Image (cartoon, rainbow, N blue to C red; front, side, top):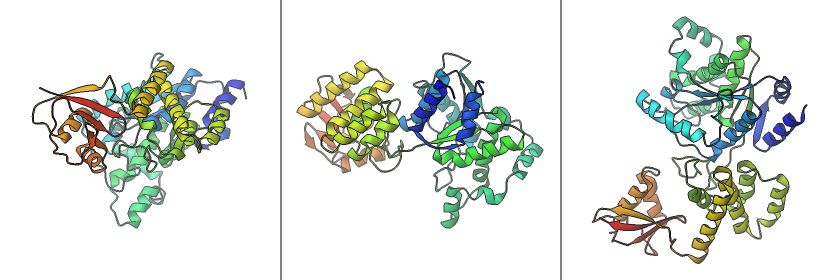
Length: 397
């Protein structure tokens, strides 16, 4: 195997959970042909976080080696909704909402993937084929898969065990996702482990139609910044690609100490040798190790200079507990309450329920004093602090 491919596999090993199969991947890489890597997304929401970006960075490395990303927008399958990890049937999404999400999704992906060379990326929609497939063709696809195979999927088994309904459109979702691979004739797909069942069906259909099956790489999933469930916008425990450098730095600083090494391995390019050195320091100096991690993540998505500046800002504000000089000014009408100011500040980035929980958790202060009453009156010039990172000064109109 040539040096470039060896280096690629070594880099992939840091973030890879399993490969189906490694020998097949080596064979494809050594073939010398341009590989097609399927990146399929349902555009239910345009919010991407650094957990999603693990796969994107792996794809970016393959782009830099001359391989092509097949950016597949599941505009048809989004209307159904992937049941992955869902204990309840997901509500169907309108076409209008899907179209609104697509542009935002593409802009988020551009943070990592290359769109500067059409030979390295193509954008497709699975409505291209699913809106044209006739009933007899679709029945032929269904006849290839048994009921027992479909209900072997873990989330379906859980629903059955809990006497919860499984609707037919949910049962068919893995078939649709798998068939995408057959249409695209993809060579490789890189997904979270929760998508393994669907993508193995992709291999299945490719073989049924006489194609060389795609390699499936599943990647490691870490807990979110709360140290519990995986990163999720609904929970608020994520570091978003669209977050500012300051927000990224601050959110990293909020993670539990026991996640520092794991985050360094999965979310940065720091050498394993350096990580082993930091591993020895974490117990004695977790704050410094965490600041190093935050710097590395900010640098990856912004720049070295920005990372340095954000570290300086963090140390100045949170070491001395000073109000930042560049504090944001939030203009509000008179007779404003504390929760109104918070809702206005976050502008939909957090739900009203999430904001109320911040008050319940004593995470909100007014002029240095903790407040829990969401109806607390706000005056002109008040400084509001939420959590460890959010500051703004009130200016009443």
